[in-house]
Image (tube, rainbow over all chains, first blue to last red; front, side, top):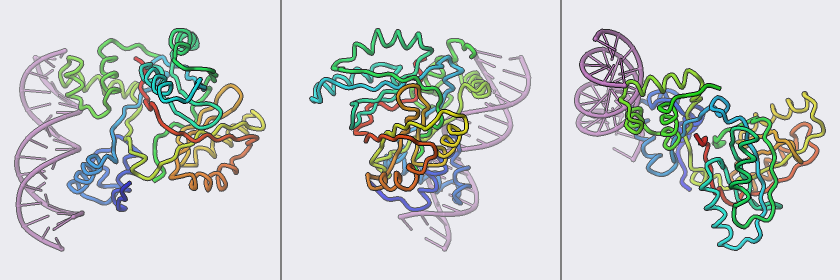
Length: 153
Length: 153
DNA sequence: AGTGAAAAGGCTTTAAC
DNA sequence: GTTAAAGCCTTTTCACT
């Protein structure tokens, strides 16, 4: 972990608040002219602080109207069991998020599907085939109240 | 929901696979020259299919080493209870994701903090003050196995 | 070291076809 | 959808603080 000066933090805050700002616009917001702003952003990328950019799409408009949370308990916590499971999870495109957690369940998945029928199909064809699963519970997501990836800098 | 032709879908797939591709690069990947590619992307934005862009930061490097899932059950499902709770959730920057779900719990939150101490502080100062909460359970996230927002187009 | 000004280069968008 | 031109943004260079 590296520490950044206030200007770098201001740049990151600006970028987080709006991911489509130009370097020039970011510079204006943080009180910097183009060249130092451009250099600092390049540095932040080189240091690995800025890891990438993402395009956000409207899932509804594209026909993905259903999201599901799946909680999973594995048979064991052996290394191989965990690795096999994780590898299988990464290969399923409908699984957007997979978290290994401490507590009653081992994994939380967030899944995006077109509709419930699509989910049932996915469940029967792929999710039940995930290796090492002892128990699985699904909860349909009714509403996404907040969906940010911003850090509270 | 609108349907898009194969070229538009290819554009969206390319953008999802790498959010920092230029219009020119996207064009190359989908077999389109610059101007039609630019026009199509502008259209997709205008139609609301592309909703925005996001910069991804390295949470670890920036000192956010702990993430927690919090499951919450409310006292009631009345409109006012839900709205008050959601409003309070949106105002807490450490809460990145908040999902209203069907099932044993009402809400799933994903929280990002510097460390466990920071979490305890947040819990005591803000989370316990969330309105309408009947029960709260927390699970520490050990590993983010997958974290995508891509749709399986 | 880091900043600011100016110029060069690249990319995106617009306009005409 | 293509080609070509205009315009904007980014980046590099250089002088300065």
